[in-house]
Image (cartoon, rainbow, N blue to C red; front, top):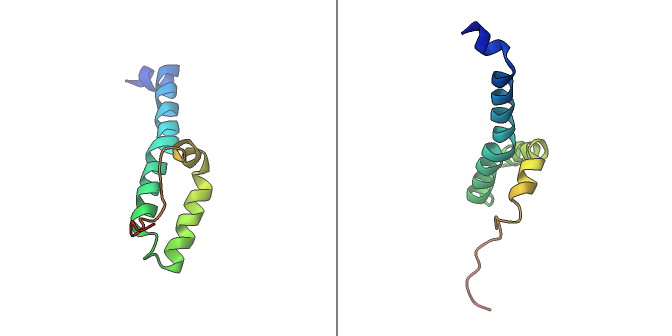
Length: 77
């Protein structure tokens, strides 16, 4: 077991895990949170969300072409 943690394969797996969490998992959770709570957030929650948007900006940019956060209209044009 000791040789597993000293080789480069374990390091590679750790990097893949951190990168996928940073670029995929947390930005998707952040988009979900913002989409559900945008109109009812308090000021401190909004401040925290803005901080997380700043922190996870590269992952949010990756998903921004595919996600729509616009408000749902009444359907009348």
